[in-house]
Image (tube, rainbow, N blue to C red; front, top):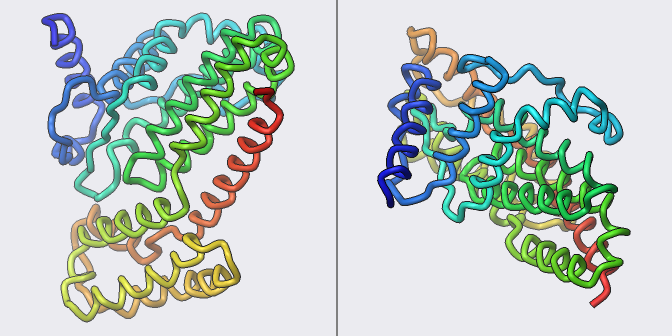
Length: 323
């Protein structure tokens, strides 16, 4: 790695550290590897904050979302133009092969400290793609491919929150592609490019089994930071058994999924039965209270629905593409 690249990564690390709370600065970082996309995402976030004159940890001053036509408004065109450098850095990060978020002391992913601004940067890339879908389909497809890369990075993260964000990015990408589809399929090179991108994404998407595995590991990881919750072998066995019963419906789309819904309703009461000391510290008490509703398995059903919707859209687009 060159001197300039090393300096850039050190700068990115400093920016990231300044944006974290005192507790989260002790996050368990992944082993250092060259070209971690997270470092570039942090640079994109920092650039966006400079562009819009926002200090960490505030979000960008953007509306939540717009309608598909709304992204073509003067307001959104101006914001996308203003954030051109940040969007470029976001695209570089999305196309970086290695992407590994660290784990915070709370058991949550480092992504939770970055996602608010990362979410809005994704919205800017999506908006730019929608603005160019009809007039400049090549540009729009580049934005869509960027979002598909970003989605797959999030799918590979050990976090259900990341998977949820990944499905949003995927849906945005497929919407842009749908808007450019008619124009793209009139050109042989564009058709080949589109098929390659969609087939690659189809192959590398997160699976239902992976969703269940991530939910399982994430839940146990978060429960372990709460004093007394799974200290005994008997309690650990009961928690693991309950988790497996809940997640069976995620792994298997068959009739047994109804059993999983029943198990979800019993989860909170099961945790309440576990005797443990109530922490006196306010932060620990908050974590204790949150643990009574862990995991947010109800949200897993939403992930599965998004998974199936995305799969259906991908299959439909691939069928329509001429070979």
